[in-house]
Length: 217
Image (cartoon, rainbow, N blue to C red):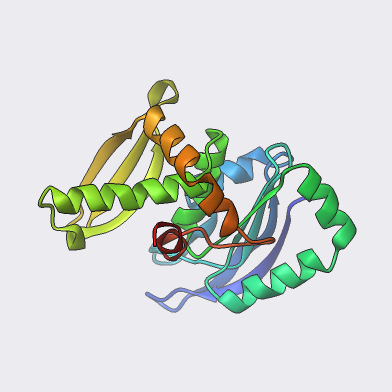
C-alpha cells in the first residue's frame, strides 16, 4: 500500500507552522485517487491554513504502477537516485522478476516530469522516443527562425481520441500545442532503437535532454 509521513512545514509567506503530508511511496493501482493528485500536482502543493497562500513543495516520492510495470522516482538530489538504485539492485530476486515483466525505471527531478512520465506510459508510448522528438522539434523550430531560447519547457500532452501533442511553454507565459504524428513516433523508434537500448541502463535513469544528446551525437 502507499506510504506517507507527516512533517511540520512553515509557511514562507506568514511563518505559520502546520502539518504537511509527504507521500514516500504511491501504488497507483491501489490508490487511484493519489494518482490523480500526482497528475494535477495537488500532492506537492502546500496551502497555508492561516494566510491561504499556496506554494509548491518537491520531495522524494516513488510512484509505482504495478499493472503498467512502471516505477518513477521523484528526487531533486542525484545522490538519492543512486541510493534508490543500490536498494533496487541489491534485491536481485525482485529485480530479476520485474525485469522479466518488462519493468521501466525512471528518475525525474520535477513534479511536471513525474506527471509527464505517467501520461506517456498511460498512452503506451516510449518516453525515450518522446524526449528525442522534443529535440527534433527544437531543431526544426530553430531552422524555421524561432528563437529557441524563448522556450522555457516542453511536455508531452495526450490529446483527444488518442492523439498525441507536445505543449511548448514560453518564457513569457505563452503556450502552444504541436501535434505529434504517429508516423513520426514509429519512425523515430525504428531508426534509433539500437542507440536507445545502448544508452539505457539498469535501474532508475533520467531520460532527459542530456540523455538525448548522447543518442543524437
